[in-house]
Length: 426
Image 1 (cartoon, rainbow, N blue to C red):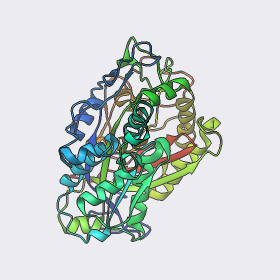
Image 2 (image 1 turned 180 degrees about the horizontal axis):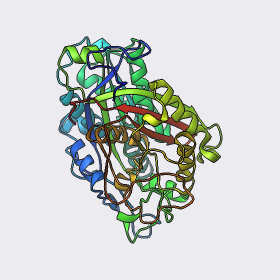
Image 3 (image 1 turned 180 degrees about the vertical axis):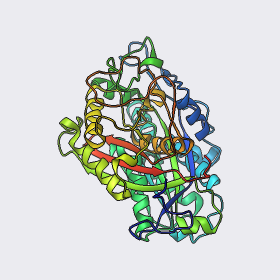
């Protein structure tokens, strides 16, 4: 990329501090590490399976993408983990992996911020304790219910465990939460509010009430006979998304500080857009107007033309309305010969508030490798969707910036531009 700044350049073309990604951690249905996630999406290998947490016989939807093989007590220990909701344990586990990769930060803890996104927070604990109250009375409700269920718990616990005393914030913008958290972290570094930001998202909403609620609103696929084929973004037979859970955290760092300490620079976060459709509480705006504005804002923030983007990691949930609106938006931004597009939710399901985090990890990792993952279960591309979706096998591309989209209920839109760095490894 001839127009990219040199590795030594601390400022971007507008004179703003560049933002390096020096650590990434992910705990997903594909496995407990970033490598597991990348292997699954490049294969592609769907992770949807029958729900193991409760007896789903007679339920309209009986499958999801669950995290099954991660040691969620390793960071906090057994005692503290019992007082911590699953969503926070997922987030802390991902943060630990990201910070371990980043290495010794060597900066004032007051200059380290944490921004953790989640759509619903500690839903597992809340639902369990409602059951306790009904069955055993109010005096039996856990005294830890409030700190376990509050949506800001993940950010708070990460800050406390590592002693980071900078800003500790929670972003809750439904399915855009993690992407918004990462983008706002970038802005904090640019404006001098922090030198390092641990940013991303976590979600653990595979609970009986959540599954029943999403099924009742018609958002979930009902392919109970073939869960692995249920999430099929941009396919003509898509019928809803598959609920997923997990977490992803990135360590964002002021470029010059990362270079000075010899940190492993995995890539650069260069652009961020955020808009609202202001149209409907769950449905996207017709024609994808909000998504168009969001992507254009992210490109402008990065100082890039649409032609500079090498691939797009689409929000691509596998719902009829979302995929159609996003495809139209992509066509408006990039034209009929736009970059290759993928949705990795065919593999991971939809991690709701954590989705933008794992997809930022995937987008940066794949941009660095020069690969675009195929979209799982895309057997028959919808002919009405004007978008160049990758199917079958991963394709090779020249190293180039990638765009990752996240769009949430409430009309929340977030887009991130990630840029590979020569010699980076993930």
